[in-house]
Image (cartoon, rainbow, N blue to C red):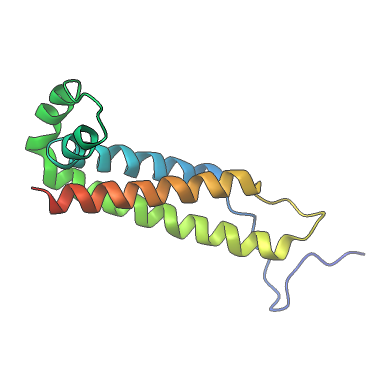
Length: 127
């Protein structure tokens, strides 16, 4: 008989779901983009030679809700980072025959988190 319980007698933890971290990261990235759309993003894009007229509509909607977007982006990015950390920790233990989140998904989630944090900080500082 195979024993599937862990050392302390409890059932083993299920593998973390990769969609939760990805969805929180996408939500945080979208909210951080809204925060940065009014001030910081146009400055950065203009310095790169990219037109910013299309940001006017986003900025007009996002500016009145800036505080709400800051809070949501922070919570979503922190939640995504915690779930990504859990995925990384599980992936280190799952071995070659285990069920893990693919490394590509974890890398894309990490890149999304980094871009979201950069947009959030830049949008917060350039007001």
